[in-house]
Image (cartoon, rainbow, N blue to C red; front, side, top):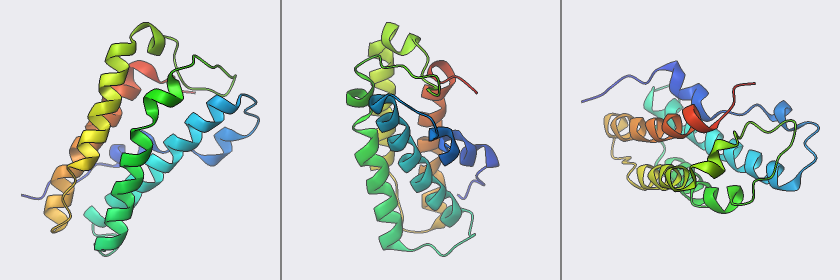
Length: 144
């Protein structure tokens, strides 16, 4: 059954490129860049699920692979508690490392489970990716 995707899903992972201006710490920049790639790929899939663009199997697989690849690097990218004035990472990431790592793994698993056989399947499985993003962003990401 097709479940409409809310606009909130679009905004979960999207990091505006202008947010990177002035970032001095290379570790923070690497984290922000990875999150931007995840957000862009997620938006591509949302557009397909919402019928804003055609469901294109190769592009959907590329977007899924982008999310899986970058999600699988989250724990490595956040391992060092690097900081920067532009960073949205909250310090409790490192206080709750096991939970943070588990949430990163959940995102990877949700992305691996994406189904592209049709729009309904994509929408149904894409919701789990959005939920995984929210589950981590809510406790570990500062709204700036």
